[in-house]
Amino acid sequence: HPDTACCSGPLKDLSALVDVTAMARLFGYVDVTDSGFIVAVLSIAFNPLFWNVVARWEHKTRALSRVFGSPRAACYCLGAVILMLNCVRSHCFTEAMKSQPKLEGLDCHWAYYLGWAVLAVGTLFVISSFLALGFTGTFLGDYFGILMEAKVTSFPFSILDNPMYWGSTAVYLGWSLMHASPAGLLLTAVVAISYTIAMLYEGPFTEEIYRQKQKGVKNK
Image 1 (spheres, helix red, strand yellow):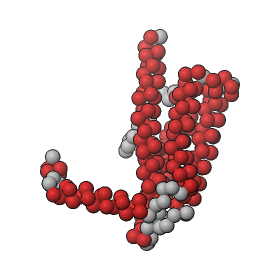
Image 2: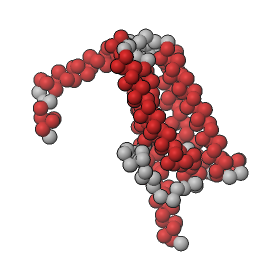
Image 3: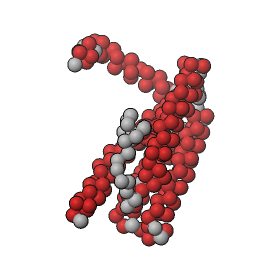
Image 4: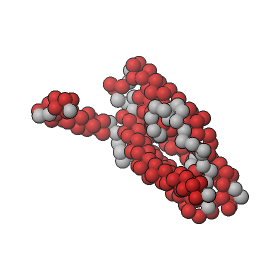
């Protein structure tokens, strides 16, 4: 590819050096041993792990559906717990930012308004995803046997896959820019990594659920 060709040799090495230097400077502003930062990292990593483990357990055993009397009631309960955990995560994220220094280069009007714009776009993706999927579609209803009739292809799914996850990541990125927080930027990277791992597990599993549904329909 011509773009990769032009970045080969010394220029490519220089680009890599700049990236490493930038990351080193960013880490220099962040105390990763701070208890607030560690709690924020743990809360970010815990959330997708929690809902994936619980949802797969429910799909295998139907235990929550039996406890709550119906799959829909169980799904609403899990959704409420996930929302609560997300609020805790956002609180820990914000407190970790407040406890660490700002990045002077980002502590300006243009970065603040850029953060607002990124946050607004992220919020748009999150809300529109929720409206397109509904509550049970958003909060793992398919693991409870509450399946959608067809794959959602309307906005924002017409623009990108997993807009809820990327929208949430954008919200944290915008929030970090608004606070000129290197700790926030680093935590946003943790959010993106956590969601990426979650998508690697959720995508194939969800596809298999709907594949089994189609197989069952054909056998009737």
